[in-house]
Image (spheres, rainbow, N blue to C red):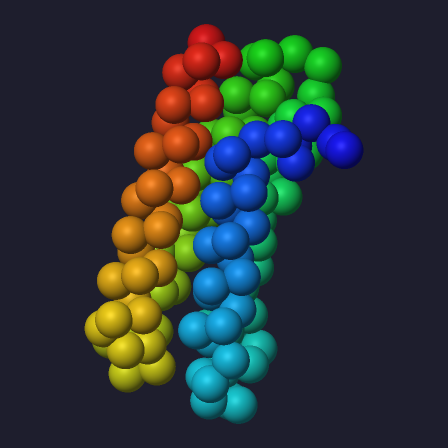
Length: 116
């Protein structure tokens, strides 16, 4: 098992990405290479940056990747908000994802503080 897989925040980020994929499945086909792709990529980037950072040799490097993961999380919320405003995401699904993102964000902030 890799170090990242042992982190609760990595697992929560993976779950968030899974939820994003489920919510974006019914998006219109003409959004496949637009909003759908952007939202999915930013959501997947959260766990990917946590994993990459956990493999770095210093806490400073790991902390930087946690910052990047947080930025990707914020990007995904921005895309999610646009999707909701366009009517692609129902309010319940939006709130579910938003709440999950807030939890991941708190976990990322806690991890970053522990690395400093």
